[in-house]
Image (cartoon, rainbow, N blue to C red; front, side, top):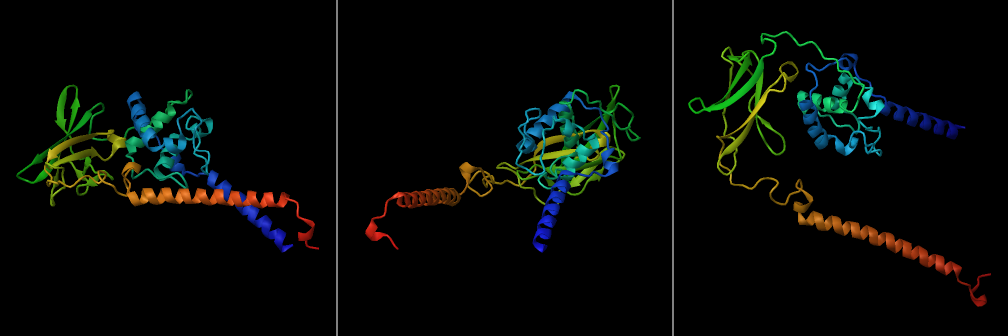
Length: 309
């Protein structure tokens, strides 16, 4: 009796586990989240690029049904009815937070990138009608086009960001907006200090306390952007300045290393992996050969004088 009871308990737990994995509860306040801007073709195009680089491996190509069906819970086809039943807020939350086999992208993608992906996914739903949130009141007049400018001031040994806004052909400085600055790196951008708020002159300074490693002539690629993308849009600028320390060392992906591509992986990994695969296949064929030999021996007639009575 105890044996059968244990089996029932295990089966119930297994069913509950599968159910829990397939039920993704999103907080109500997140479910109702809306984009501050209306989805555009430009956003869809940007979202398609992000989707191709980050999402295709699991979700496949929208509308093709070629998602990875081996994953549990299933990633589903973004163009499917089940997927499209998610609200915009649910999609934003799930992409940001992730769970089980779905990774969290809140550190890998900006909020603007996530909204771009959602805009791209919604382009496969002909019945979708977007609902946008009302813009938060700010001291920036409606219709103002913001832009960032980045320069280096040798006397202050600082990088200067200037935020301006253009409305009806007139340009003015914009203060009170938080901005960040980072150096582009192969394994993720390196932030320079903490975020700064532009002053009444629209300026924010980032002091360089340490030397930044550059390339062979000291070039450094810098990325400046506005933090509140949902409020102001995806405002950023990229600029290469010769302000870094000269670095003649080869790039991390230039030589053989464990984190490099297959063609540039260490030889011991390549030979070790290849040897292991060959050894496994040799063992499998050897076992099959022995099994076949045993089967053949079992089919042979045993002489009368060798039979065991």
